[in-house]
Length: 258
Ligand code: FPP
Image 1 (tube, rainbow, N blue to C red):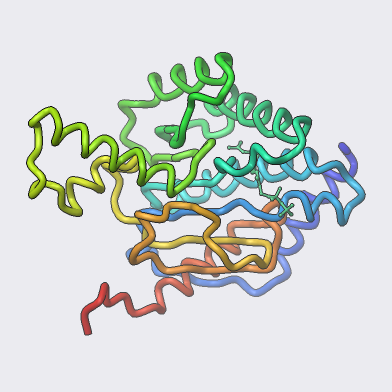
Image 2: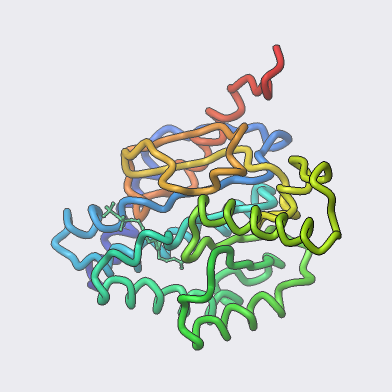
């Protein structure tokens, strides 16, 4: 794997150097970007590697893209690491993804050093191992007061599940007399989402050629712009981010107005 890993990194460097660059307006960078990190399995298969190798390469891409987003001033980055439906995969693959996430959280100070980054995990934690849950709490605690960019890692996350949880929380508030039925408006309901204190998601990026949302940020993407790419996530580079942001900056966001 080591040689193929180095070749993969070299390939990404060459793409960065030899394909035309894309300029973005640094004053209009999206505040909140969501990424569906797709295509790790296909990337690995094409190279005769294991799916878990694809996820490892995907974790490296996440490190680079998080750092790049911090550099250009993206304030919130939400990445889809594991969905409520991904439990259908082989146990070995699930274990490998969970282990990678544990490693990433354990090493994040080094990986994202100096970025003053705040890490949060969004999703249903009840199915995660005690070991992973402890690590999540530890990282969220020591990064919690930071004022730099926020990285939300969606883990055992499902958009429908999130909306149902919010509905239950709202019902409980009404039952306990903390809210009346009329208080349930968009602002209050948004505050019950995992991303309650984050700004709206401006841009959703999905690599690997798939063009669907797969239960990601269903509530939050009501007015998001979408950008798709055929490149698999492990091959994704800051240049792809610039392509996505440049496309976003050309869009005319009307939010239902004219
Ligand atoms: C989708 O690609 C990817 C996943 C289900 C896992 C994403 C996980 C990582 C990038 C690992 C690291 C995460 C963190 C937070 C460190 P796929 O497996 O569905 O690819 P395919 O569609 O080509 O099979």
